[in-house]
Image (cartoon, rainbow, N blue to C red):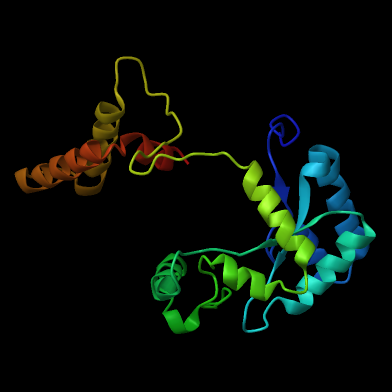
Length: 217
């Protein structure tokens, strides 16, 4: 699948959870090399080893390890920022969302917890990677080659094939009412009114296809 759709794509090795960083952390250079060879066979010169660093010092050891590996394998390195939110202040929101996803209190979160996963300025990135000027230069090169434009406010969802004679809205409505019947047995006027309100809100937002895709998954 990757090979089939690789044309025009640039590939990065990923964050600390990526295959190459994971194998290197486990000191299994052989498996890391296999993963790198696989990506290089598909993407050629458009495959880059990703370096991530934080002001706290986190990622420093890994970045040196990855840079050494890249040099030995003759692979280009690129300086990146593992962005999960735009501003540092949004860290709290990310924590809450993770806690909801894992159904645990924030204090019991097991995932990586750092306030550094915000979108850093060019000045901050230059400071973090001052020892890796080539990685910074590669970042600018990669950015200059990316021409993807996403229109904000216009969500794009995968197409969902509905039965003949149905629209996204009508099919979602039918599934919703069928599910409500199974749950409640009988639909009171209050339940119907609430379902119609929710469905109409989804329709107005243009999210019918999204809800159908999630239901299908």
